[in-house]
Amino acid sequence: MITARGLTKRYGDTTAVDAIDFTVKPGSVTGFLGPNGAGKSTTMRMVTGLDHPTSGTVTVNGRSYRDHPAPLHEVGCLLEAKAIHGGRSAYNHLLWLAKSNGISRGRVDEVIGLVGLEDVAHKRAGAFSLGMGQRLGIAAALLGDPGVLLFDEPVNGLDPEGIRWIRTLIRNLAADGRTVFVSSHLMSEMALTADHLLVIGRGKILADTNMADFIARNSTEHVLVRSPHAARLTAELRAKGWQVEAADDNALTVYGASMEQIGDVAGSHGLFLYELRQVQASLEEAFMRLTADSVEFHAGRPAEPAPAPATAGSPANLTTAGV
Ligand SMILES: Nc1ncnc2c1ncn2[C@@H]1O[C@H](COP(=O)(O)OP(=O)(O)OP(=O)(O)O)[C@@H](O)[C@H]1O
Image (tube, rainbow, N blue to C red; front, side, top):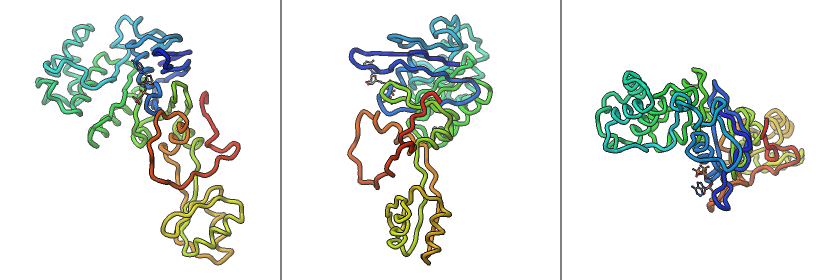
């Protein structure tokens, strides 16, 4: 279990992490999301004792990282891939870590097997590919068989096989009852990996909720309709008070109405439909809506259809912090 209370980190005038409270529980994967510069890495560094909070506390199983007599048995972390001595072999790197933490040589062989590095264990780690470097970093994190694991951007730069391997490993670690805290910018990956989400923006917690609730609360579901009578159908749907946007190929995006309601309107005016489909919101869409005000830099982007206007109580207005 990881517990933060009033956790704050300032660098000069910059408040990287601003008095946040959260708990990361065992038995599930908690995804840590936020735009660039939101404070994710700073938070993770404070959890693992690499940075001191300016104020507040963060503990792992009730104690701060530095107060654990054998921290590798408590917390494993993959914070920066390839932060190792490049001239050493993978085996010697792990053996050195094991020896300095009272861990047996047998466990080194075990973790090398777990991450699939047997064939290259005696090669120079400096010559490792990104994927092999990630596997070595994970082997080091698992060395002390810790109950709490932190992964900062674990799939960055990996190929699909490597991504799938890490996803399965992370899910299995949580299924074993461990506390697993993972940051990633890859929304599609996070949607497949995390059960719970912690979203941070400009150093503050914007949401602390399970995946399904997060998507439901922070996105607008809509219906896609395609009809050869798109213009007439648009007029009839708008007359009902629903918002309609035209898309390509006689397609319309309709907000505020169900598929049945749209089908009924079309039928009652004798308008043919070629397609009628509920569009599920994605984690990416939900994340973009929630963090729109928190991003540091906005790049110029191609014109997109405007999102549905936010009305009182609409999902765009909801903040799920503390749920
Ligand atoms: N050592 C440091 N000195 C000064 N400012 C820092 C330092 N580390 C982080 N910051 C600032 O603190 C803020 C949070 O940075 P942090 O790296 O924690 O964000 P992040 O969410 O991990 O971002 P990214 O997704 O880009 O990695 C940023 O404004 C960053 O510039």
